[in-house]
Image (tube, rainbow, N blue to C red; front, side, top):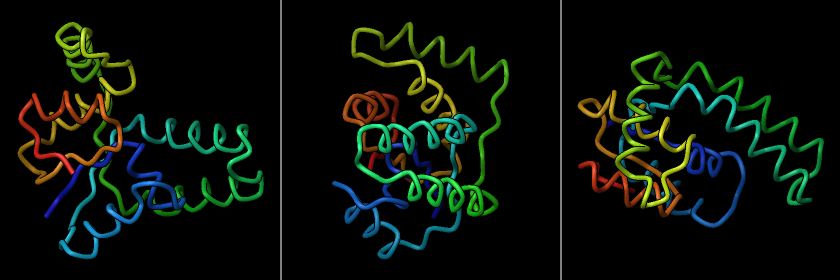
Length: 142
């Protein structure tokens, strides 16, 4: 089975927090063959790590280790390339879901997932707003 992870869920693979156990259960109970990530995840992951450091949730040395580990693991992930068509789709999604609170980076995540929809079983997110919007776009959410 293949899955798409947004950054909020991917981060749980690297740092134990609320929702980590549920995500780990998905990986242990299902045979995950391929994990798709948006190209923007490379930037978002680093931003998430440094925010956790800034808010004193993790130490600076741990932040560096997490980023290094993600960079090493990147060869295992299938990144959905960003391009003009993906950005246009993100704009369309923002126009459609602005009342629901869809944000910029989440629109890029959702546009990326839509690009590989036929190849994935689940869209995995820890973001409540994104989860609801992805569900309304026909995804099976985890």
